[in-house]
Length: 250
Image 1 (cartoon, one colour):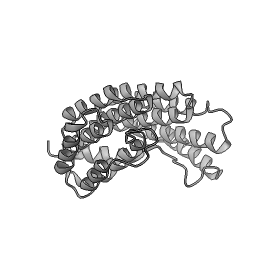
Image 2 (image 1 turned 90 degrees about the horizontal axis):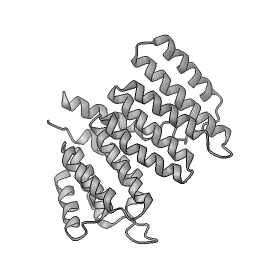
Image 3 (image 1 turned 180 degrees about the vertical axis):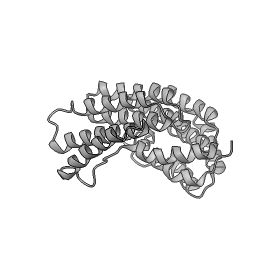
């Protein structure tokens, strides 16, 4: 399988950066990314995945239990079309994670690895663990985000039943947030209508799709959702990456 790297590098960096704040802390109170992470990201931006991978593997020789280095190595391997090898690094990161937060972040990275493969079932397996982590913390908003993330992957991989199920879970869970503001309620309702429109469209039911498009537009017209709000979570950006990956398989 030949993988064209450059079209998907920038999107993958977005994914890594969204997980990085939890992964990079090597000591209590440390906020800065390790230098090897910065160097590796720069190499990826330059389209040099082999050099980035070599850097991460060199780091792992002296720090084999580095969660951030294992996740970074796995992510580069994903981009190189070596997902199976990348899974070993993600599994190691999950195993050696020293806090629940970092373990959840590593599990999410594994989920995204399977997302690159269009594997809805395995994505859900790991997103479920992240979902449960946020549930234990009573963080209903993040639970909803993760559920929508899994749903988007399943939608783009063609499993519409799983997608609908997880979008509904995301919607219902997000609305459990205590003292939820009207804007946040509209955000979840918009996402749910938007998801149902896309699912109906893929099923060829244009009338149903238009009904949900109209409902979504009506929510936006209320203007409670700020333009700065993440109207669609990470998988909307991930969708573009997955489309490129699937095209390269053809």
